[in-house]
Length: 256
Image 1 (spheres, helix red, strand yellow):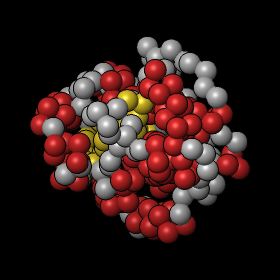
Image 2: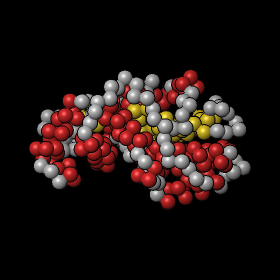
Image 3: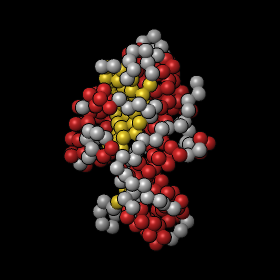
Image 4: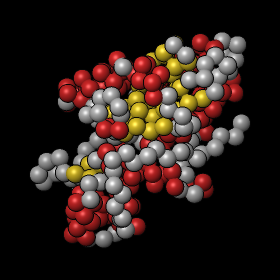
């Protein structure tokens, strides 16, 4: 089975695109990816080593990225973290990459998903649950799927153990609101793209949740509104999760 790695662009909503230099794009990319890995603001000294330039040069570039609204400084003297606009720009950059440059899923993850889902070719319910559980185990976020009026969800403990939600009860409350209204929202919004990415304030529900919903629509004989996806903090490995979600949706299409 050959899965396309192309991911459809989600509109920028109210974001106004600002032109960045190639180096600024690479610095934004580094901030997003480093923050996803360590969950701590990214400082200029680390990036200076990565880009082999002075800390002063990096500070100037980060100040411009902050002025443009792509990153912000949560505390005085702290490093920077991406804003929702910064994450959106990063996801758009992923979408625009040539296919040869798009990060590939590890063969281990692909085989794990395919093997678990293919085991239940004659059991729709078990196939979907296995797909959701696989996403939970690999991404350490919440996994979900819906076919018609049936909602499958797993990994709530993973979601609420993320540092963002442990440290800020307001974010956790907003995520809970999003989950409470997820099924009716999906019915109403009916995302049509093969892959949809809703980042933080782009979510129609729980706009201040600091959460991202990455969800794929897939074809099934049981409903014309079948979805599978992942809900996690805005701080996550988008390249990996986006491809996992799309691959899993494609696998379910084949099995069902």
